[in-house]
Image (cartoon, rainbow over all chains, first blue to last red; front, side, top):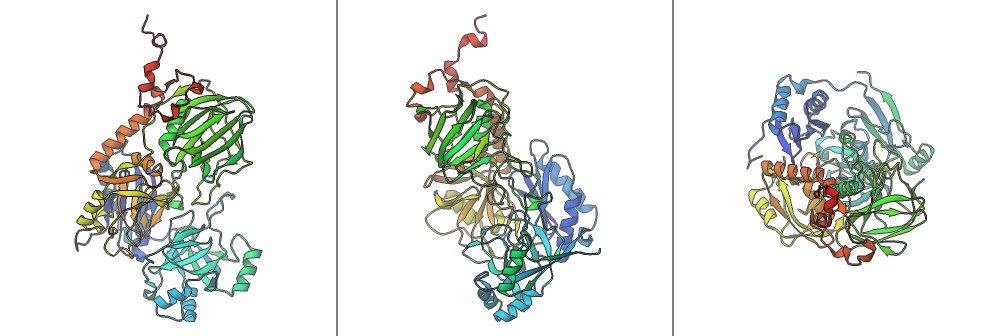
Length: 247
Length: 343
């Protein structure tokens, strides 16, 4: 982006030496997320090593020793022109998850701070976050870790300037109208508002990945004691209930 | 079965190979050895595939007991190594007999040293790789009591040495522009290239903090940028404008903006920079970057031909670890009769 200049979407840009990024929007929206998921499914060309999506972009990693930057860019341009990606359908086989969640307490100590930043009481924040049905927009940052959205405008909170040194596995963190649910303990610039008993990545299993892009989730408020009992009884998903979404 | 029983081990030791490419969309970065050049050098010394797993030792090695005879090689950050008390040359291959004790001490320069076994370390694969991915929750650090089994070894040569490129003391990192570079004003990018950095205290297999005097390096609207894909080598600015160079075990996406991407061939120099090492960033064009990387890849392909017999008995060379063996220099001692020049 030039000084004050706006990009025209979709746009193709380089990522380091060995990648290219196709971006459908600079803000999160339903159509741009759907375009991203559909475009990735159709990228297939010589020299491509792997592809992945983020919220509104598709990343293509390739081997510049076997295919040139110009060739990759030309092929991506042709594919972009092939159809209206913004009107693409969501992927099939999606699931809906209801996940018992403790908001606040010592288990999620930044709820009060987040509620304050959103201009709400803690009780209002729990009502608002605990009733939002959100979609897995993309998997990223760590193994099987979802970015979830979109929350209402009031949750358009910036990231913190300093990192929270460590949140535990299963932590529900919030910023910029989204949640992230943490796979493994990690530092984060987002606020730790809720705690779940979900294990998202189970390397010992045949299918180690709990969630897929397009799945939908609600993080339903439960009391701290009830949560601890659920997590003990069901150490893999902390009492989460999954149903198929008819497409 | 041949292999090593781990009697004692440093805190940052793990089995590593080339990692797991192809799982980016599942949120798993490739991972693998922090210094992949050291993996290739070890493979060249043992005349085996660079995809085999080795033991990566961060800062400090350990004490290992051989459960059978095998070949080993030592590469990466030079460390003090002894076999039953006798000093072993670094950047070299050796024969180990059953029951012998290998002691690997602290790094003399750099951070990550590597212990390679003939046939590779054959622990179980998870998702196609033996590499521990500590950030991703795959595998774990090596602990006392672990056994490192060697795979079938088809080679027999030992006593080879290789001149290793010095990447253990910081220096210049070549960097190209990436898709978020233009979020940083031109004067910030210029100042970034002109700034003297040192490696900070916050450093692991995910990334390395760069410390400098003066103001941080901030992008416009930097706390509200959409999370985007991360490539190893990306230089990410945290909220307060402090740069981190991300390594192969980095997160796969992130919202803190990236000013540019260090070339893959310079990442070992980042990982191997010791605490306080001086580093700087040199902007290069995409075309220059591609040419530099292609030359590096040709160098890696040539490693097997750069290995040569250690002519002096390594046990007599108490000072060997202080040698900077320039690429090719070890061939000065090669036997002319071996290459048929007298016929």
